[in-house]
Image 1 (tube, rainbow, N blue to C red):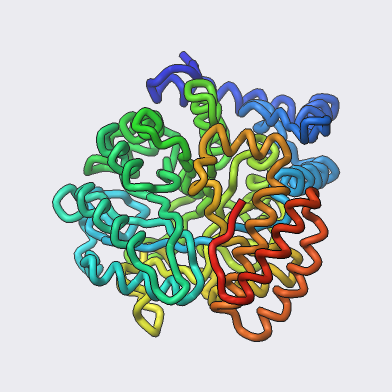
Image 2 (image 1 turned 30 degrees about the vertical axis):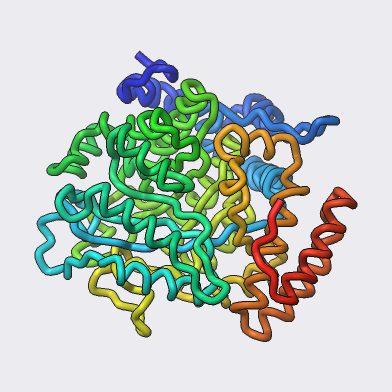
Length: 479
């Protein structure tokens, strides 16, 4: 029985509800009147107190996903872009993954780290090696990391993860500092989530991989991850442990995309219903080639066009939630979906353990092939050429604006007086400390132009003053 307020995965991700939703979507995919009413419901409303969106239910969004009328699909894209601009402006938050260990006891069929893969090199970073990786990332200009590790109670216990977080935060190199560590590790206990919270993490990220329980059990034949309910209920335990920023995601290509899309939105609805705040981020990875993994094994791959449509509809359905796309995707794909709703991207990523300290990109311990292999400077320059502000901001986390407090800021429209100025100031830091001459010239022109888009005259005045101080050597200003 479907119940979004239930704490049981089989009830808040109810197979029967998803199947009924897909049948309803098929029956109404050409219902112009209904489609128009759904699009109208999702449209931003501007009031004296800011801009607001109601979002969409999983069933409403599924109708739009099923609709393939070209005119209506274009309206979906236009609406997604409008919502993106209303709540995130033209900022794109930058981050990088940091792989700590590829030891893993699970048997996941889509991941090269699975236990039966005997020819992949197994590696676990020492704290000294973690420090070297952090310095290499700081030398690129990164301020925000997402740490990754396989599930292995012996090699990667929670104590090891906590030690790594402490090491990462402790490294100050030249003007470099990692100001936010997000964590992507296996489902764990409330007690361990409390430890992660106490360690000062940002967002706890855990991909569901697939919401189709039967497929999930087949894709995870062995290991702790085989327990579908324990894995799916992890976000509730994380929130019980005090972590109020959590990130969802599915691995598109494992199961039929419409099923996954509905399940993903149902999970977001569940978090909102139980905890009063939905996911902080949603990630949209697709199955990619890797050591021992051939994506053609999975017959549910989606085209770039369907992928773009999914991104647009996630933005429409959950307008206040950040959306992440990694270097799994090509430059061309990333360019398209950034416009449609993506608000965070990785840059210069290496998905191998210890990959950042090697001059040449290592491939022997990669979790997946990286499609976009440009440097961070190149990615930053590319974004600015398209009119976006690459943001290295971590202020909301450091000022305690997480969970419902961040959502309140976003909904009130104050994001333009807070996140926009912070983006400009952190971009200026990057330009001064790490950028090439060409990138710096483009960035300075962009900052000069974007200062005028800060609504508050008082905030604008402070930003101008801070930018001058950054140019003279000061760092880490924030609102």
